[in-house]
Image 1 (tube, rainbow, N blue to C red):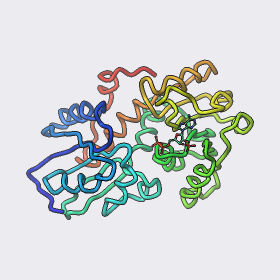
Image 2: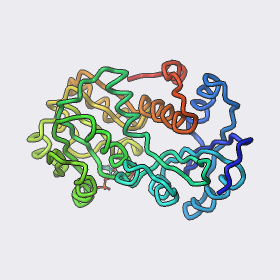
Image 3: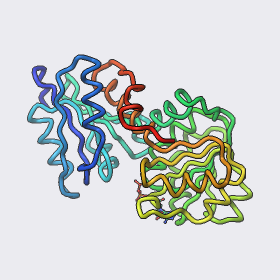
Image 4: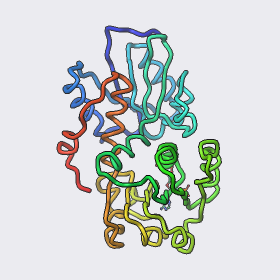
Length: 283
Ligand code: ATR
């Protein structure tokens, strides 16, 4: 693919993308870094990701943010996926390099840690972590959780086979045997007694909760939902009822992953603090 230095086009590709906060976030970053702002939304049909992304880069596009449901396809599309993106089978950022090759990385996991550990000061280095869900969202943060801490990480999923498969995919990054799959049941989650619970299921989309979430939260000091706004409420309200002291929705992760994507494109890290105010941080 031909790299065109005079163009600075960036976009979000996903389906749907209509309600995305990404344009506002990247507009703010562009102002800070004094980069001309050019950011559009691409919403191809589910089968058309590759042709749409190829067309974007051929017409002068320089970088894409990738969201649901295309993060896995983005890894396959890239010439040079990062090791973390390959392990997660998930890339949320693509960049056209001067060589004409497409590089891909995943900034979701590092973004989550930046939001929880760096900004909020959550001490997760030794914490036992329970991840609810084993879909794309769980996969996108697992590598960073493994790299960051030393405590055990339990993956509980309604369909247990997916949890088993996810653990297997990360086995070669799990030198100390910290990853375990478990049943999404009251008995197992009570036995796990995790200090930090991360809701990576999409149950909140339908305003519901993963089964046995209450049992998982009983011993927790930290609870985070990867979704933000209304979708995070069922889980965070339950965590509040369970007297979990530290709560976070996924807004911080959204902001921080965007900043890291911006750095992947422009080799300069924007300040994120202003975004928390602008987007109305709640938890
Ligand atoms: P995403 O990219 O948001 O992770 P996904 O890959 O479709 O989307 O995965 C959705 C996850 O939420 C899965 O772990 C799913 O569990 P199953 O694999 O058993 O389907 C989980 N999930 C969705 N709704 C749920 C619910 N009501 N209770 C428990 N888990 C739920």
